[in-house]
Amino acid sequence: MARHINRRAFLNTSCSGIAAALAANNLFADPRPPVRHPRATDGDNRHEPNWDERFTLTVGTKNGDLVGNSDRVLQAAVDYVARLGGGTVNVLPGIYTLRNSVFLPSNIRLLGSGADSILTKIPSESVKLSEESDWYDQEITLSKSAGFRVGDGVVLKTQNPHNGATDVLKRTLVARQGNRFKLNDGLRKNFWLSGEPTCSSLFPLLTSEYTNDVVIENITLDGNAQNNANLNGNYGGGIFLQDCNRYTFRKVESRNYNGDGFSFQICHDVIVDNCYSHDNADLGVHPGSGSQRPLIVNNRLERNGIGIFWCWGVKYGHAEKNRLVGNRNYGISIGHNDTDNVMVDNDVIDSGKVGILFRDASRGKDFWANRNRIENNRIHNIGANDGIAIDIQGQTKDLQILGNQLKEIQKPMNRIGIRIGANASRIELANNSIQGFSKPIDDRRSV
Image (cartoon, rainbow, N blue to C red; front, top):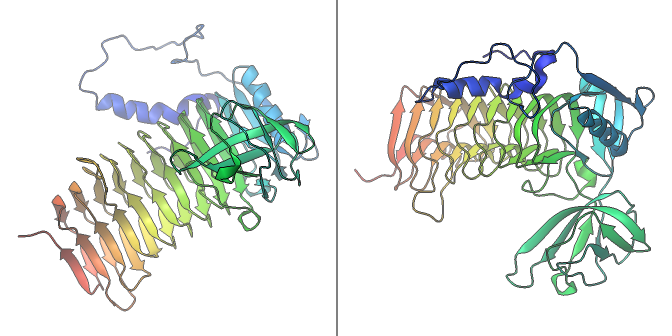
């Protein structure tokens, strides 16, 4: 699989390989003539000429087209480029300290200078709300203004007065009068004092909703975890996307976030290639609920809570040649309706509890991770005394576990190579090498 990106056609490269693969597997070939000489046609964003040059704008802390070291200068840059129909924002070396997310528009490329271009964030603080806000309000009142400023990104949390669940909203503070702040959007939830509502200076570093065709490349994200509260990966991360298509992350380092490194929810054809996600509190790469066809290749995912977490309903994904080392709970976790995915030629080493976990599904007729293939992976050394290299739980079925090397060089203790739950079915095991475990295969199905 070619990894080189054509710089002139970067807006197309994020999905061209996947599109070709899908077309090759299509039962019904497209009968229409192929487009051999594309032209820029108003309203047609499927075929674009391979232009020699697109607009490029540089951002730097000391020099560049735009100069600054905050989210404001980065936001101004991406918005300017997007207004011209797309192009590149070149982030020069420096440390950019954010008070709010950089909100990514469609059709841009954000290109950093590797380890020398660092996006980080301010320390978080959390304060209680001192006045009631109803679901139709667009303002909150804090018990103290503390360090909050107009323009800051915040997370609002409260206990829902009707069902006891926790409501979480992300907003921006856009106006102020003392401790009273206007929000960029309405609440649509009741923030009553009985729910002990809070406002916290938490946000993803890079984020977007309902956008397409973006490339993020060669940049470093540092979440300043030691000075920030946790933000659940369903709402944030070093990178957080919601309802987006055709994003490519290449040579991006996402580290030290008190949450996920990469999280994308209901996002399709996302590519994470040659990235480094490490020392994050929760998940290294989080293909979120409903995401179709993620491609996760050539990455290093180290010392996270979980290396790769296939969420709910993630389908037709491919994870290959990733190195997952020292993840505290699981190297890879897959579960609720995550079907038809392939994990091949990965190194899953020193996982805390389980190398590859097929999670149980507590509800539903057929909500398990069925029809997945695990092939030619190396799963070595599980930390827990009762650790398991591959754990197949619940009613998971139709798995292919082929040609994997499972190896334990520590004392065997109570560690198991492959455990198959009592209700699992149609599990194909072939040509796997299993060494050093107290029990190579623990098949709990009735004969």
